[in-house]
Image 1 (cartoon, rainbow, N blue to C red):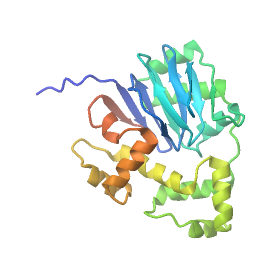
Image 2 (tube, rainbow, N blue to C red):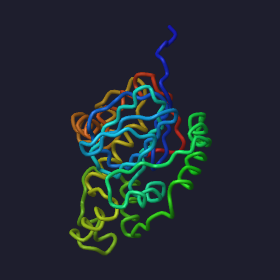
Image 3 (cartoon, rainbow, N blue to C red):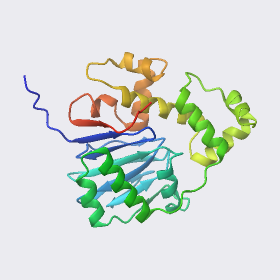
Image 4 (tube, rainbow, N blue to C red):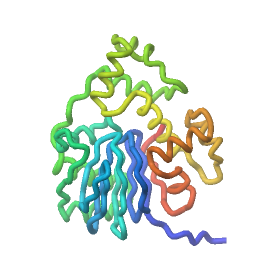
Length: 254
């Protein structure tokens, strides 16, 4: 039987970010560990940040900030940028310490982004947007960068702050403080985010949540469910398992 589920958009996956392009459902308040770049490609949308609502055409929200999105009928591009990524660190300077800020969105780029139908086109158009709206990336402490890369590569079941600190020649308390200061999130939240990102990347039709939880490094299925609802107000199956979003794997997503 032919699947007649309407396609709402595309989910693009990279190793350090993912993006949703299309018509998206509204969501309730949640906290992404990643930074959020939200673009209304053909109109405004409603964004709530830390309890305050506004209409905007383009906005960036800092990592681990409470937010909710109501796109209405607007075609959206929502990019989740890892807190150690070059893309986020280019945009971070626009916030000036605020949890969120509106950005300019040139119509030419909005049209180009809306037409992006593959990883290369979307990546190229996003690079143009970052050049137009961002600045030089804020520096990231080399020790923090090392820890981020190590956690991304190893994805340990449990966080051992003492061992991580010894790896970069710091005390556990100093690393904990420095990591939060540099990325805006705690070590524990960052590791959970990496695990939920792996869950999104590894989801396949027919896969049970218990299997997905094990493959992504969660203790059990309830742990995966709690984390997903906290960070995205949705399970991976909402975007991947229903057939409404085409998946474009742009690079090896760990």
